Image 1 (tube, rainbow, N blue to C red):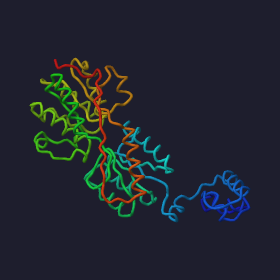
Image 2: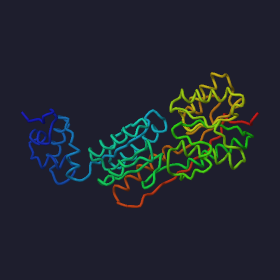
Image 3: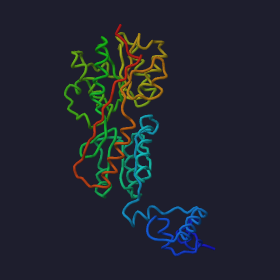
Image 4: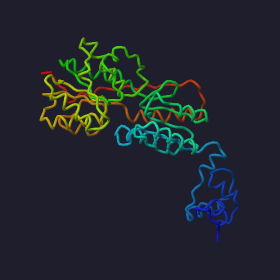
Length: 356
């Protein structure tokens, strides 16, 4: 009887013994390198399939210096934004012969540190990450010091390769569209932890390719209002906890006020869903009572009535570009970090109309 590992899994020795070949021959066949007769190749492959043998990629990686795996750390697996970008990352990696290990952090920095630690221990060849906090990156520096390249996507940070969109310009263009329709009371629903005050917005110098998207979009909102000569008011910065119900509460409160906003910009799909619930509960009409602009051209935004005007980010391109950038880093060491800024477009639909 062939021996098995302590966990009961078939080993390379098991395959070689049952196939009647040497361990070296079995290794060459299963590793896809070196000479072996056709008969030996057929026996080894048939035996490996019969025993359900899987190579020890970690051990092979230790020997070769490569595991052919990429680590992917995302901040919120529930968001449709990530489902589309992750699909492109995985497809691009697979085309290049790499597998992907996915980790989720729920926007928690401690969970992110732990996830990166797991990936480092698994000796991944590179890490793609959507940061929970772009100002807290010591764990990424440690990974790079161990020879594991890191590429950021969606959220940039100084000193790292990144693939992002120009969130400041995207939000600016959305607000400028609303100003052009005659709106001046334009609110923005934003995650409370990233929200700057009106006074802070007046002096913000955050680079457009660095930081949390929601904060950058808030800056773009303020810049468009300033450009149009519209006062930037704290009253119109609707700070929400990061969930749909929080967005519903703050938007409902604003819409019930004596001077409600005539238009609302939301910083992502979670905030948008909360606003839509509030509008329905208050029996308001979009866009007759309030215009709405959302981020991301997701399939459901064309199904709701009216279809939503959105800032469309190139989600597939973000994922594929980030994966290609990491694969290039793995093959070629370059100490100079590069940030790729992709363009967005404003998709005009029925949720925006003239101010009344």
